[in-house]
Length: 180
Image (tube, one colour):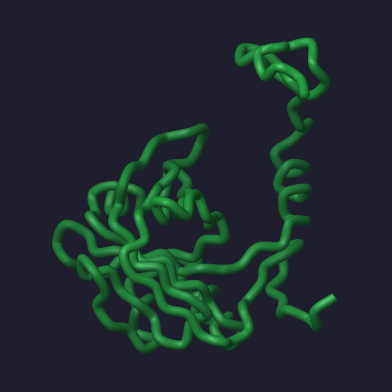
């Protein structure tokens, strides 16, 4: 095993090394799109108590002990300030039957929450019925990285169902096929 401080080891670069960069943003977006992800609606309440939500596929597990998750949001998003100021957020992992809600929450509109069956979760974060899983989280931290803000939440409550998840890959919504 090589020493992590050894910059001559294959695949290891010093922190100040620029490394390879993609030729264009479109090439990077296309290559990243090859990775299949689940689809979520991340929700919170703004300072006035109004529900805020958006579609995100940038959701990941971070730690089991303590139970932490992370997701990211474009810094220029109109929702970024609301999520940064919120004490809690919910990650609603969508099922195959919720593709229309995913499309609805991916666009800026005031009536996003007019569809779906919603209840208030911890800290008032809206929780959607019929999801594959829901993670109700306390915001632990957020930080700007590149053109996004990373949000880290501590899972305080979760629920799950046996429904099939909605998947996004190659610019298309997809279902999950038979196990391999």
